Length: 347
Image 1 (spheres, rainbow, N blue to C red):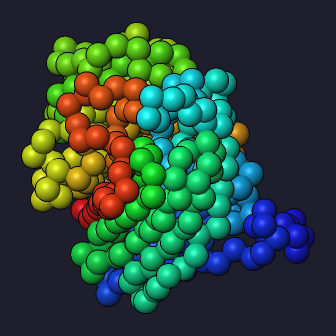
Image 2 (tube, rainbow, N blue to C red; image 1 turned 135 degrees about the vertical axis):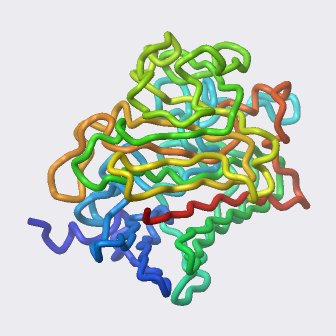
């Protein structure tokens, strides 16, 4: 049983929840702590509603789990090797939070902060955050906003924007985990199609360890729809990290938001999700380490209970300017913009 203090965020103030609703009966629930996406309820053709997102039983449990459920992550989503940057030729140490590396912006990254609500209406909310110079080791004062807009055709449009007064790498994403079959089902039975010819091999700590590799002929190939289970752990690249936890460099045609980057189907054939993004890569994470994370029903999740499809730059991009993608470094006077749309369809 939660007591009063359990209903407060780590800063001692209550959480603020916002629910967006469209004309078709879909609802999206969000929270100001971590600008977190808590819930996605989709009406099915039989009149029922299905929860498509992993989540906790109470807002107070989100700051206590380390799976980043639904959180906005930054300044730099994914990993930066050895938690360090080079800025103007000088080393710039970051705050490490995964061994010697930094993951998802550090221990007090954007997932662990209270965002301010700048505006909202029935179908949209905009959150803002100020990240001070030196926050988690990053240079520059960064002003960030993220907007969530639910359209009447069941599309959640997420848009990120940021500006800085010093050069800094910026890579923002949402860390939602999807299980289109609903709670308690094995997410590996979902069918995935991912429009990418190349992926980035990583070592057992998730750090890039080789050049971009062709998916052809490997279990990493999702260019044609297949279940996540079909080739799980087939490759040495997967075995290092207990499954899929890899960035895929998307086809260049995906970047205009008109062509999908990925499709995901529920195992029972009742729900489809399409992902559109102008980010250069998608991180596919099959929930390999979800065991023990507090679940919406009050219990805890098992490994592989949900799958994340995170739009982003390739991991550790600050150390790899040779990769075929735009620069992840935001300069003063520039505006970082990124958009990702998740469209849901009851079949």
